Image (cartoon, rainbow, N blue to C red; front, side):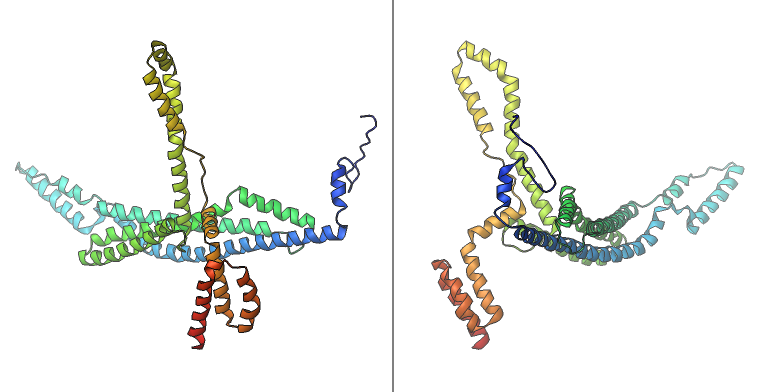
Length: 387
């Protein structure tokens, strides 16, 4: 140790000689250019994500504003139905007539019929009024809250871009990566995903309250609106669940991804449940099993061990993601997708020169089983456009 010299200077690293040897493989200019290119790639990627989130939130804010305005028009008129109807002129007139008759009959010693309870019933609030007001005000709160969350997220994204600019220095790249890691760690993407889900829930609450309100007014209008609302709900439900059942279905929404993760975690819980039960059985029956073994009941011991082995042998517990499922499907159909890519490239350009140069090179690398289908797609394109 006394022959070891550790001198650490800025910009040098004499403690780790292999690090210096790696640095000698490339010049300083090459390293600077490589870091600048990497920083530029990260900058374009992060800016694209932030720009997409901002555009999505802007659209949702416009929808939330219009939806809240419509809801306000309904709630301004409906909240009055939550007040007792004691101020109704009809009820007030009936109560005055009853009080006068009751006073005259009492002063003359005549028997009277007590109808004060019936008059009190007129002052009670209708149950349907409570229901649709609850639905509408809950929908309004969700709409306003989603707008507030969207505004907060836009403030976070503006703070993310503050001071970064378009520079590609290593210090700016580190700062950008530090902020982007914060966005990922604190699940800003999930918060952005929650906003449209809350707006969809607010829409369903509004439609439900509207159905209850129309049921008290006119049955014919209620029936027509119920049919339209039912068809719309079925279409929304089918489009949401179809992408869960079919990997190639493009009907992917934030609600679909949320349901997918709920299903994955529920499946994980079902898989871990036998292990939990098995551990509990081991703890509860360990002493009893030993006593049974000492008495010679080996058949019972074999049965318990078989049950515990079957309960614990659930295999690896892997919770897949939406993108992993997509990439798995893409890998399985990679040859077919490459053939479709070449056919679509020719359909977009319709350039025979490009077909003879670029596509010809790609066709040599295509799987032989997909060549006939690719040629047929190109021929179909020619027939459709050129006859």
